[in-house]
Image 1 (cartoon, helix red, strand yellow):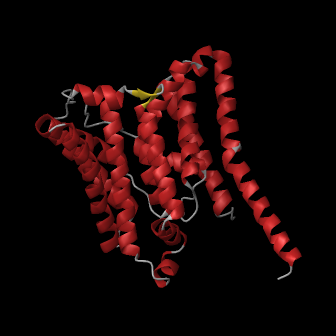
Image 2 (spheres, helix red, strand yellow):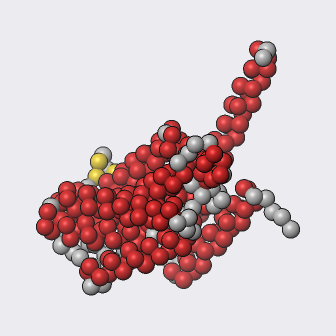
Image 3 (cartoon, one colour):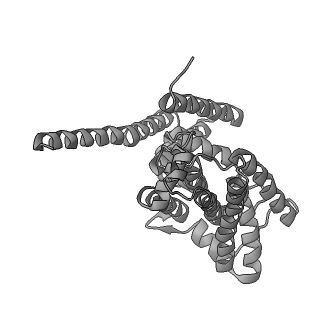
Length: 328
């Protein structure tokens, strides 16, 4: 190949990356900033440090479980049980803390979430069952176990050090919940982008038969995907229980749909094989900013539900246009 041909390929590659950068790194921040500016014209406290820190705490559990949801969706599936598993892990983790200490309780949350996710993954892989049906059933199982363990009542007996450090502690003025959320998302990005496992996830989501014939252990990879989703649910439980100072069997109710909406809104293809952790980040931030804006300007929760639903539907339509095209 001539030097001019090499130069042309290099320029084309650079232009392609610039276009991708502009799409993912400029459009969403601009939209979020515009939404914030409009809100601040009505309610000047929107850009206050207090509100932004509170928003970061509120978004942290959703951002964490969206990491696991991202892997599931890019791998060609989805996980509807992630929020219920978060609640289950929080309940049993706090019960463990009262007997064995804080460290043991945190370990139970994270490892318990991973085991529950592996349970989902094994059923989906071994029996080739629909991820939608399996994780929907797992949602009820996890909620039922959490409600049974607590009698349907919250548990408020948490160690003070655990609540004060993870729930309300900070580093350089930044609360621990968003720090943990961002670190989890960075770890997910590295795992998805720079490891063999991440490449296998994308390959399975793009074409499972092609991945299988290329030597990918589809069953093992899919099991690990849901195990990872469960781990993020456990990490979310660590953050949420500390922040609200209680373990509630109905914690994070509805966030399984919000996490799915966030990854679609961010641009991750529901058909699998396409997307990045940055897409999920922008999706979570967009949903969170919208909800916070509506709250601050005094919009009722009923209208907020309507607005969020409309955003999700629009995101699904855009996803169809972007990744599959519109057919008559």
